[in-house]
Length: 117
Image (cartoon, rainbow, N blue to C red; front, top):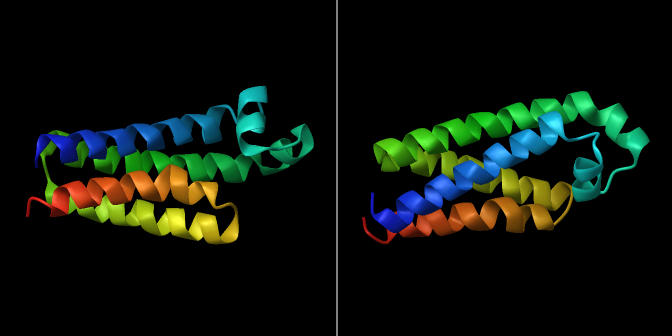
């Protein structure tokens, strides 16, 4: 995998690791509530669901890290595709900013991989 693609794949992995931390550990804290625009009550009521979401983001981060470290284009494309689908779904059902935060970086990494194929 070319260096730019590897860097972008690892960047997307780092983003999803950050999402894991936000959703699993900071959801009910002031930073998490501010980022996700939640009241304390709503954050408390949804913290178990958010932790589950965070766990899935951790799986995406792990798969992308594996792909980036081992230069596995096939694995990278699979996990990046999952991120794009999740970003599109999140944008359609929750907030368009999810597309920007998740899908756009993944699409950039996919483009970097595909341009050298």
